[in-house]
Length: 350
Ligand SMILES: Nc1nc2c(ncn2[C@@H]2O[C@H](COP(=O)(O)OP(=O)(O)OP(=O)(O)O)[C@@H](O)[C@H]2O)c(=O)[nH]1
Ligand SMILES: [Mg+2]
Image (cartoon, rainbow, N blue to C red):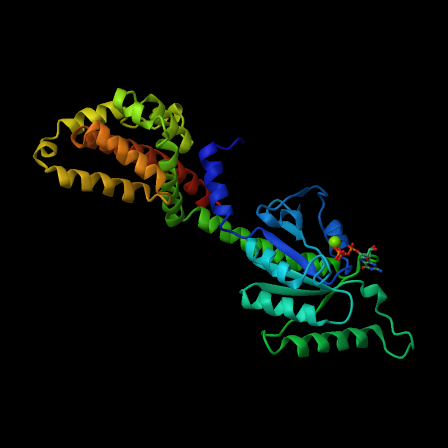
């Protein structure tokens, strides 16, 4: 089923605040890429946003989750400092830390950093097929046991250490099912959390607030002045509708009482209170309207808007601003209805 653009956009908004990626980091040459290659059916990667794009690649693990391939920690091209920067810029909560040899100082530094950042770390010991005691005295179980002791002793000073390595081998596939289970559990929990957020009333409001706030720079382009001077609001209406990803059909379908910006202007102009208000109050009200309803971050559009207010005259400008504000409110209401309908559909599945 093709999803409505508004719903798609809301989904992306919630997704960007969720965790559908697991980072695969660890020692250089430990087999991180080989593990991902084995675990992910789809070999096609998608690049991760942010400037980490150059260094990381995300591979689809299942319908919900991605495994993100990182370069090895502590190589010449990837200093620990740079590595930390990448981790900071990426929206990943869970990491698999892959070893294939003794724990080194850079590993400890990285893991300590991850823990400090509130990330969860799962320890993998890959190339388990190479765990052989050359003297033939120790069994594989004894070797694994001493590896786990090393891990616990090293990590204990800075994290709750109740986990052991998941021993894996890309060569003979040992431990791969256990690893898959661990990954599935993480993604299942995250997917549940995603749908909880998706169906949350507060998330819907956050999204709509964000849409209202980000409408401002789109409305107040250099042509804005001419538009309101000529009282031709078509393009403003189109901009707002496409910004909220609402189509005429959506409005008609919902039989929403719908007025054009122009009619709102007329009704605001007819309000007696406007004439009674003193000019300072009116001006303050416009600025307030701009600040509260648009919560804009940049100062330039506000200057251009204030300039046009002076040119048009405050008394003339006020009803126009009120009308645009009211129109945006109406669009917001429709978007709110549409998201609420979708939320209810999903709630039945939860
Ligand atoms: N014996 C054995 N070799 C493995 C295993 N996994 C990977 N390798 C080999 O180890 C080498 C490194 O594998 P990669 O997957 O490139 O390692 P990586 O951790 O991604 O390396 P960087 O990205 O450079 O840090 C390759 O030659 C793999 O074939 C394993 O389980 N057992
Ligand atoms: Mg690699």
